[in-house]
Image (cartoon, rainbow, N blue to C red; front, side, top):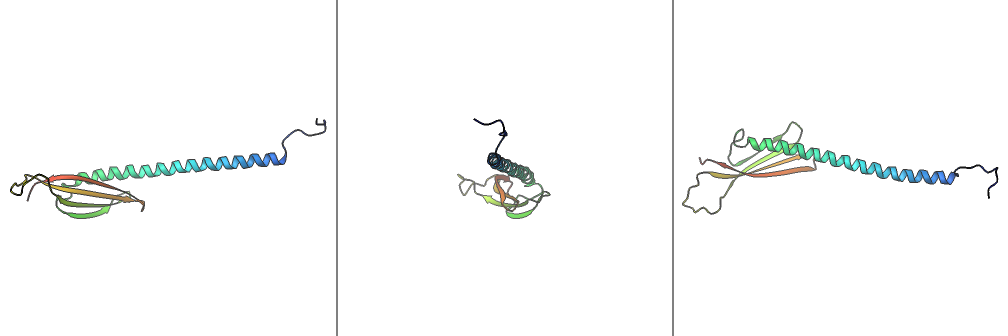
Length: 129
């Protein structure tokens, strides 16, 4: 039994243990939130790169001639792109058949943030020269 003179409350060790537990929990919460923010930043970069790549691929055959070759540049967002166009052999054509259209493999690489990048590939049909 306690005497009536004893003060009710927490001891210093109990308060210190509570602060340690609170510090560990807040550290874990901050780490979880910062990981979520990094993931959000990365997904924004991928979305922007995909939209820019879509517009650049739409220019192939219009602004960029549909002929073998490579070119590169930089988007307004700062991402770098490189475009490579190469002939693509259509299967199941004999050597005597002249195809009405030629196929080209178009490969577009978009890089940003020095560590992230995407590669897009498609086939485009063009008329023979």
